[in-house]
Length: 185
Image (cartoon, rainbow, N blue to C red):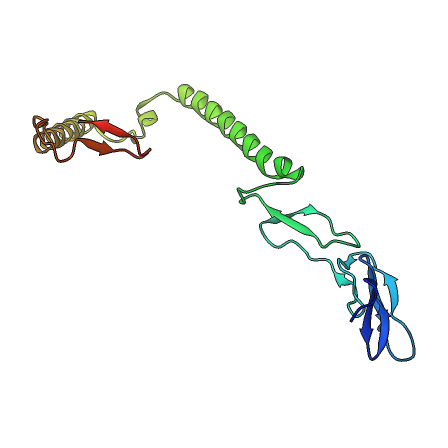
C-alpha cells in the first residue's frame, strides 16, 4: 500500500509517482526510484503515475475542431458544430455560428442579384417556360390544372364537412391537449 500519495509500493519498495505533466522515463525497481521527465511538445500526462509515460496528444477527426489545445497536463479537447449541448468554448461562435450567419447573408445577396437579373430578362421564359411553346397550349394547361384543383378541393370538403357536436355525452367531458391542460367540451 502507498504510504504517501506520490509514492507507490512495488517489489517491497515505495516508488515515486510522477506528477501530471511528467511521464515515467525509467520505472521503479529494486535498485532505483522512478525517474520522471517533462512531457515533450504534443504529449501529455494527466495523472500521477509510477509506470505511465507521456501519451501523444489526440488529433480531432473529421467534423471536429480543437476546442482546447493539448497541454502537458491535459489531452486535446475536440468539439463539433453539431453538438447542441454545451458548454462550448469561445471558438464555437466563430467556428460554427458565424459561418452560418455569413452564409445566410450571402444567400440573401445572391437571391437579390438573381431577381434583378430576372427583371432585366422579362419575357415568357421568366415564367420558366421555353419560348417555343405556343400561348394556346399554356392557357389550356392552366385551365386543366385549375379544374383539377377545384375538383380536389370539393372532394376534400365533401368528405370532411363539419357534423354538429354533441354536448350531451357525459362520459368524456374533457379533451387532453399536448400541454396536459384540459379543455371543456
